[in-house]
Image (cartoon, helix red, strand yellow):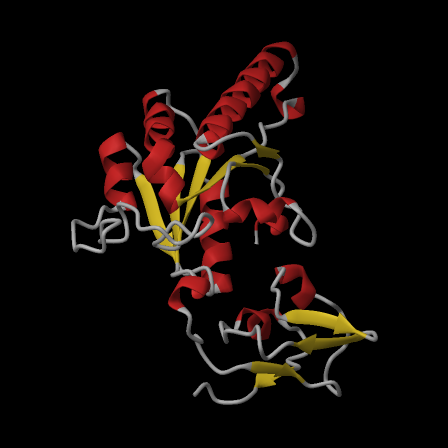
Amino acid sequence: MLGKFDVIVTGDIGCYALGASPPLSRMDTILCMGGGITMAHGIDQALRYKALRQSLTVTPTKCRNSQKVVGLMGDSTFFHSGITGLLNIAYNKGKAIIIVADNQITAMTGHQENPGSGQTLMGEQTVTVSIEDFGRVCGIKNIAAVDPYNIPQTISMLQEAIDSPETYLIVSRKPCPLYLRKKLGNRLSVNEVKCKKCEQCLQLGCPAIEKVDEQIQINTLLCVGCGMCKTICPAKSIDNGNTVP
């Protein structure tokens, strides 16, 4: 969805780093844990300083506004090393947009619990830490949570944040399907008669969507039934398949 916007995207170490590769190709930097926020802040400050210098040497009509920067990191990384970067953004009056992908588990390294999952590593119930609360304590005023499977809602929230002159903290929250180990809805299939082969569904990067002999197909063994492909298909060629047992 970030591919719809002309922004700089900074990331760090996590499963979302796969977004740097095709078909998404939507991450410009990957440095280290916490770098998704701190790199966003640094680049944002540099671009704003550059724009300020330009405004002093050219007419206002020719001065181009600085490009927006979006910092991306996961929930586990946020608790590990992202909070200090967020505090720096608020303290230094930064304008970067921060997105925390909250799948409520440490997915990349084996599904270990983290402070946002509500359990200790030993499986004991404990406090569930709120990313939004940390944002408020750090001084971020604009905070929102989105459902990443709801594409229109997510795009609308991104547009609002990009258009705003202030920083935003967006929490994209949905449990990791590999951790849940269950289907989210009906398995989907492609109606070959309706399919226009525009390949927009392939741009999602979903591992279940395949191109076989020039035909788009959905691998029912991999489909979890999230419905995102059905939402974006302009030909309405993706139908409900078998009911999930």
